[in-house]
Length: 142
Image (cartoon, rainbow, N blue to C red; front, side, top):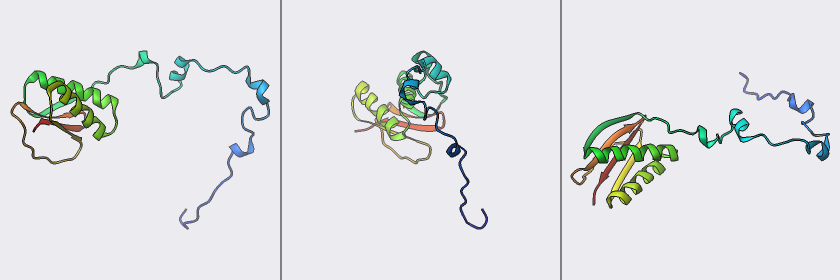
């Protein structure tokens, strides 16, 4: 609309009655719920548990001062964190708390696409890697 005027057009749905609007409650009694497997096929946001499988994530190690077994643990914990959480702060919190629990305090974790850092860490307790397109910086200090 070049003239800046917002125009509205009649809705097709408004000219037709809503489904089941005139049928009443007795007509709805014969409707049955859709089975869970059929719902998944229709694009339900909750697919059956059998269909769920871990998504492979691309891990790219950038820098490490950490034993290889602990690096692998960091990768696995990060994979789980990325599958459980969508927000970067929640992912970082999950990774930090798992490492605090497994290796004692005090771990720090930063997750994101764009950040700078300059940190001091304990020897053998630093890893910096990418999981897919997001960076994970994990280190122990304090």
